[in-house]
Every structure is written in structure tokens, then in C-alpha cells.
Length: 256
Image 1 (cartoon, rainbow, N blue to C red):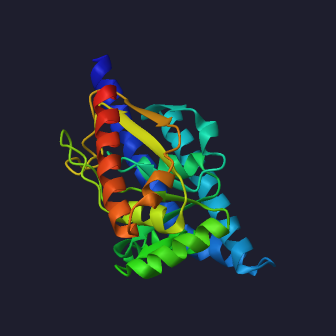
Image 2 (cartoon, rainbow, N blue to C red; image 1 turned 180 degrees about the vertical axis):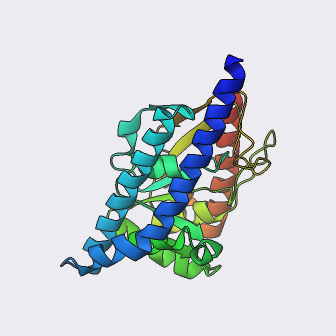
Image 3 (cartoon, rainbow, N blue to C red; image 1 turned 45 degrees about the vertical axis):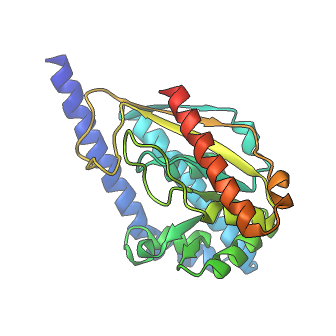
């Protein structure tokens, strides 16, 4: 009986949480964006305000889910992100970006162009000045370099989408290209959710039998200087992509 009550409560709390997330996505462009853009300051300052707002909003959202008993979480070595430039993370669940932005006050990120057309996500994207992945690699690289010059921490999921459960991680070359061509070191983050849920294979309402626990560990920086010695940036990016794939797969296997 207690298990049924606990499950029912967590289902209701999960539904409420996602409702509040969607409501926030609608209210941001209606209320928050006009207020922040009316305040004096440059475009850079307005984007910084937007990033801070999203950071605190996501931190509040995670805190609410934890308070409602939907999830628990643990963040290890948070201080390693203080001077991070390029943050690369594996991507097992729907909540990964929410967690990362909630612990990185100056976070920017590269988002799919489809999210700009989503009524629940276009407001926060516009507010924080996130980079739109429009398949123009040169434009994305230029915007990434601009973000680093503004002291933004750029969050990228090098897989491109959520990981298929129980399969080896296959990384795309875009993240490595950014690292090589802008010459910034990588701050890797390992994300694990137990029991696994909110993956490509799960709907939001398919909640696990017990509370999900998120383990987020910020690892030591990966220096890119050895890859800059390659004959061409493309060759360095290919090698870095292979090494990053091996790195994340090994780290995930160790945690499992």
C-alpha cells in the first residue's frame, strides 16, 4: 500500500513539475523578457541578466522537484567549473541541461533550431542569447568564440541528442572542432541517473518505481594542446573526437 501511495504521489508531483516548467516557458517571453530588455545596459549585459535568470529559475525548479520527492541529486567537484569555457557532458536524460545550467551561473549552450519554434523553449533561448545550431558550422564556431570572449561557459552535448540506453556513446565532431579552432580546454561532466528514466525511450509519465537519483561529477580538465600539434585542425578534431568517445564510454562503464 505504501509503495502505491509513494508511486501515485511521485506521478502527480512529476506532472505538476512539468506543468510548472511549461508555464514558465510561456511566461518568460510575456513577462520576463520585456522587463529585462527595458532595463538599461548593453546587449551583453542583457544576455548576462538572462543567463542569470535562467540559472536561478532552473535551480529553483530542481529544488522544487527534490522537495516534492521526485528526485535526489549529488554534485561532486562543483568548483572545477569556476573558470570553465567549454563544458562537455554525456546526455542520458531530459533533465541534463536543466541540471547543468542550474549549477553554472554563466552558462550558454548550443541548441537545436527546432527548439526556437517550440513555444515552451523559445523564450528562455532568446532571453539568454543561446547559440542556435543552424547547420552552418562556421557561424556556430564564430558565435562560440564570441561566447568565450564574453566569459560564458558553453555547454555542449557532443552526442547531439540523448543517449540510447545501454549503448556505446558515439560523439559527433562539432564539439571537438569548437575546442580545437577556438583553442579552449574542455571541462568534462559525467551525468548518471538511477534508475534510468526520461531517456529517448521514456515518456515523462513513465516514472520509475523509486525516486530517480542524479549523480553529476565534474572531472579534471582535458587539455587540448596536444591536439593542436596535428598537421591540420581537422585531423586534430578527428583524434580528439575519438579520444573523447573513449573517455566518456570508460567513465560511464566505471560508474555502472
